[in-house]
Length: 68
Image (cartoon, rainbow, N blue to C red; front, side, top):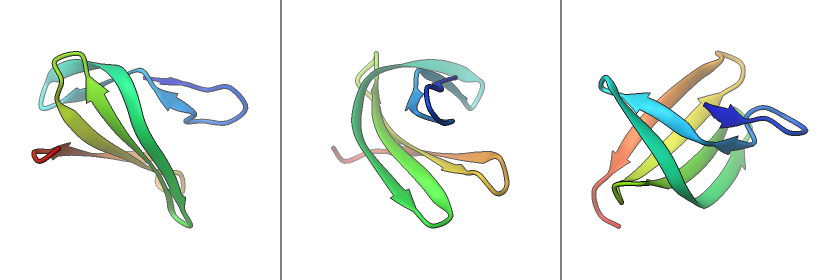
């Protein structure tokens, strides 16, 4: 689930990982690469994830970050 203002995705609000829904509490950083857009987020339960969107595939990759 993302906020989509001028473009999609602009800001993640929630995501489902391994069957569990996580609400985003804080957007820690964003970056753009030629083939993807990345977001490092902290969830309400204080877990950190990287959410990577690939527009050409319309797909998301979710990475749980253990060291923060």
